[in-house]
Length: 300
Ligand SMILES: NC(=O)c1ccc[n+]([C@@H]2O[C@H](COP(=O)([O-])OP(=O)(O)OC[C@H]3O[C@@H](n4cnc5c(N)ncnc54)[C@H](OP(=O)(O)O)[C@@H]3O)[C@@H](O)[C@H]2O)c1
Image (cartoon, rainbow, N blue to C red; front, side):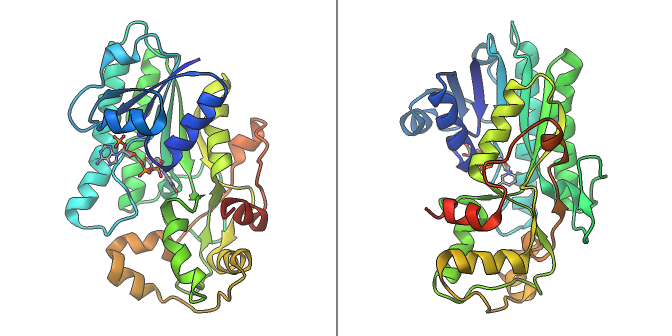
């Protein structure tokens, strides 16, 4: 299979590229820094900034599928400027990718595009499947526009899957890397009371879901990429403490995170009990369905 990826130099993308290489797929990466991507990933890389204009049709022509992961990091202090970059890099970036897909001859037949569980906004204890409506905060609005931009490709007969991803467990990056230092020191613990849900997923299963979405002709529309057994923030903290053999009782007040990260703190002070209804219905078998084992595996 010939696959073109954007955002491949990141946490999810580098793992997806490694899996595609293992199965001998032909991989091309579109990156803002193609030399670095080529060197790091060991695949063909071509230059494209998602914010700058249409993706290069020549690089997309003849590809079977596109995996779209590019976007400004969400886990940073939210200011008006960073929020604009987070939203625009995804919404305009995806529109620019779809413009390139439209111009490619022959064009790819499938687009698997990242999204996030933030689509649903802060929720209570109810289980959240893919048919739930979006939330109405900044992140939910950005995810809704991001998914709508990807869905435009369907008008040209492209099979579109949007992967609403939870917190990816990888010590090399993302939320787990940020949580590890205090937990290793034994001063980690539940955040903002700990009752809110934390939809986690092992990196192997994120990769597994992206590959299943790539290959499965019956996969289309939104899919939740979160483990079948989400944990509350307090349960997650305890499990992380167990995995590290450290106490994990020190409560972290929500306002402390708000001081550090601004409104971005809401990603951990609130949450959603997201369940992967569509992947399970489509026959996806999770490699790491249980939190304790998933954390032990992720932490090596
Ligand atoms: N990791 C998670 O827990 C998680 C959870 C939910 C959703 N997601 C979503 O899944 C996707 C992949 O996640 P990830 O953790 O692998 O992301 P990541 O490590 O932050 O990498 C994303 C890639 O996007 C490109 N990029 C960065 N800033 C950009 C900007 N301002 N404009 C355009 N492109 C930019 C970079 O690629 P180049 O430098 O090569 O261009 C970067 O490697 C993201 O869209 C993310 O929002 C991730």
